[in-house]
Length: 76
Image 1 (cartoon, helix red, strand yellow):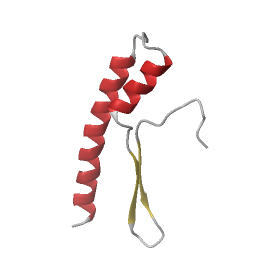
Image 2: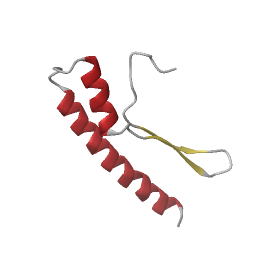
Image 3: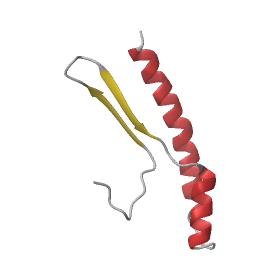
């Protein structure tokens, strides 16, 4: 169960099921625009908004690459 006071920014699970198949459970980050809008509506002067938005942008790029690489490996 996820704590309601926390937001998942990136979650990736790679599982091996009992049939020997690999499963990918992926929950990617929200859009940077959504994050910035949410923080600005909460507290427009919050000093860490830009840092969090940058992290989300990085996680989106990183997660996309990792997801593609995993799919390349398991589709061989």
